[in-house]
Length: 71
Figure 1 (cartoon, rainbow, N blue to C red):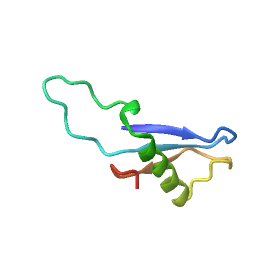
Figure 2: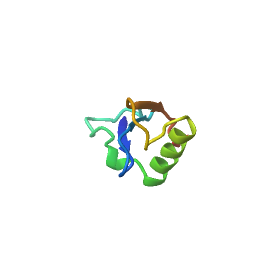
Figure 3: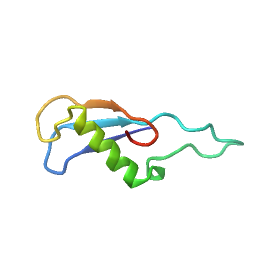
């Protein structure tokens, strides 16, 4: 699962890659971005900034791999 984030005033995106969850049973739907808790997304964005993502700078999209807790 991956989601793209961008600051409202910035130009540079970050793609936050979360590990795959447990496989669904019996044809259940896959995990969607709306199923990720907002506090985990906020923690993942903070981790991306700590890893060097500068949302207000220009440049290429940055891919950040985070754990299930967003760290």
